[in-house]
Image (cartoon, rainbow, N blue to C red):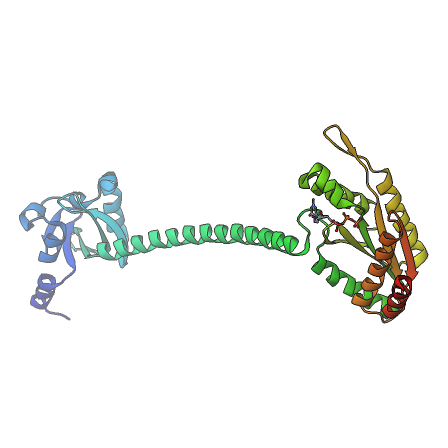
Length: 338
Ligand SMILES: Nc1nc2c(ncn2[C@@H]2O[C@H](COP(=O)(O)OP(=O)(O)OP(=O)(O)O)[C@@H](O)[C@H]2O)c(=O)[nH]1
């Protein structure tokens, strides 16, 4: 048993606020910590009810709280929002116990500790956590938006890196890449592949007569027309200037010639208008079927030699040949020149 003077000392020096109230909730005794916690003097509290320290919104609950205190002990502390004399809100942890004396009178002992700083820190942390969650969400949105933009930019870059900007056909580098794949498959599965060079006849004259912009328009329209006459698997590229190259996978020379003649004929029929002028044009071409194990350079050189021959022998024609070693053409050309 703890002696009553020890209990009194405990009451006096406790850093927790301790109050003893009667069954009407009127303060009978309060320690210094309790007075200090709420800013009231002992004289102001004694005789008053604990309603004095209830937060404004809880004042109407005074009777209910008193009934709760009288009927059930609260030994583990619960959090309450109460009010300092100045009106400032305080958060306290409160435990209470009710003693019923032999004469039937009840006394409620309440122990309070101030947890305002802790609650304030907790609230701040919760606010910060909510802000972090929001920031995180908006960051995720930004990242996914940027990822989409980046993917689009990458697609655009890939397109620019592989396309001729004027005619939207493949550029030379992309053609070489695609043709290498077709050559690999042709050798692997023993399939034919043909290659064709096409070049507009007297294109310089169109530029000179109508201007460079009209020349550009002619190139674009021609590319569009050629593309429309090819299979999806055929590879069309602008080789440079007014020269186009086509790789026809799974196509032997006879079929490649048919495709080439179709293009030349479509070109002859093509009528492009500029102001009051109607522009017509012809193209020349050289087409070869690739010989087994022939490199891309070799087969293109062979097609180019034929194109050169088509130009030299009058233009507006397609010359065709199953590929043979380049020196054979060179010697033929040499003979011709002699
Ligand atoms: N408008 C335009 N012209 C180009 C472009 N690239 C090259 N050219 C022009 O194409 C013309 C090609 O002239 P040439 O090499 O003499 O050929 P050609 O006049 O077609 O004569 P042949 O090929 O011998 O029938 C030049 O005037 C170049 O300036 C281009 O992107 N746009």
